[in-house]
Length: 276
Image (cartoon, rainbow, N blue to C red):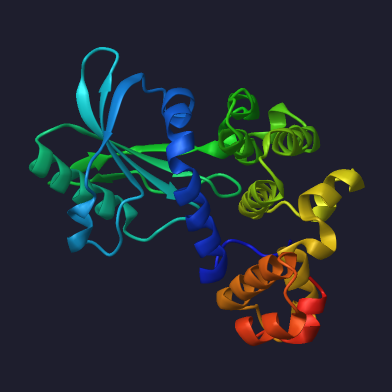
């Protein structure tokens, strides 16, 4: 796992993970990380993106325990982005104009190290700011205390100075094994865990417990392991479509279909399919 979440292939994995888990993790993120006491929450259309380069990560109309109603806008960032404060300011103005409600904005930093993200615009004619929260400064126990696997996995992005990362990973993997409904769900959670490890720049050799790393990567049955093996024989990085083809082939093989049929269907070589 030497890849970093920089290119489009890794970025798409990260985006997919967020989409899959956002609704499950949001209530605890709001309460334990953003310290918002929300009693009511509802989806609002994110059609403000029609004038933007990209749609917002998350928009919610909420009511807190004091009866205040406002909009929460959250963006997940793994690196600094040029003109990010101006993009956030544009969202704030459009949302306030459209809904007539206050807007509270958060950037949740999920990258490695300390964020270097500008959080305000301050000049003679404009003063604007938003909140910046770095998960790498949050006690992992905040996430481990949750009864949701999706939330527990975020502990891998927490502050390791307050706990042993190997023990944290052990607890997460144990939870995945105990609570997953079958191999497919367990495999999906382990794949998400590996993406989070990439975000934190954690590699297989980061851990001494070989049994633990074997569970996480599943070695020869693991797509990321297979990708690494193939990359040693190919120039450059494997395209995202190739990874998807490997995953499809892996599922077809489980159904007992022949390697020749799978090769014809996925456009992979028989040799690649035999390694699955």
